[in-house]
Length: 271
Image 1 (tube, rainbow, N blue to C red):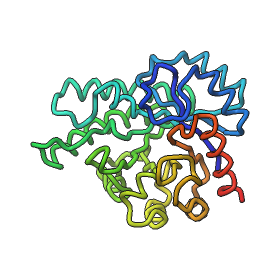
Image 2: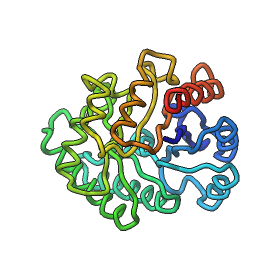
Image 3: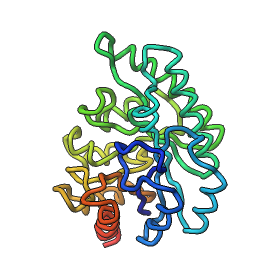
């Protein structure tokens, strides 16, 4: 397995769930020196970066972009797939499609977390799901044409009320019926929503497309109570051998958080 770190450009909101929020080349230099293999890019839209500049930085620092994440599309762009306004849903789809096209440039996957939306107070699960499936299929079809895999990330109930655990995500995959969509477990959310992290990972099996690591307090692994050695062992057992990426809060400070994360993850994954 490779180890990644979630980052964002300096234009991101301070509330973005990343360690570093700065010029991407500045971040990449730090991340490379720490020994990470790749960076997950949290973007609001595809116009936020210069493709050629980012590609040159990736080559310079021997890094990859395993995933482009879409949380900021929801949090900052204020658009999502289950929105009752068709025009808002259309903007959400077009924004995510832009990220899909960007992912095609870098050989990346695209995460769909909170941008899938939520179930409104006066709406039913069925109505929200119908909107989500329509938007998601639209994006997944373009992604398939570009050989891009999309990822559904379960998110805990305190942040969103739709697709909260791995079982929910697997059920959504079955309804989507798109071969280029996988589930993206995040152990921070799983600690809240899944009865057993390891059992849910085994349940997902080969449909795990990417994994987020953060401890029970969303700090760097090793700063809370999760058993990452056990989690890493189960990931190996199900044949997962791609990225485990730290999506953590920048505590006590960004540099220390990034250093602590890779040191602990490296020990758990490689022994």
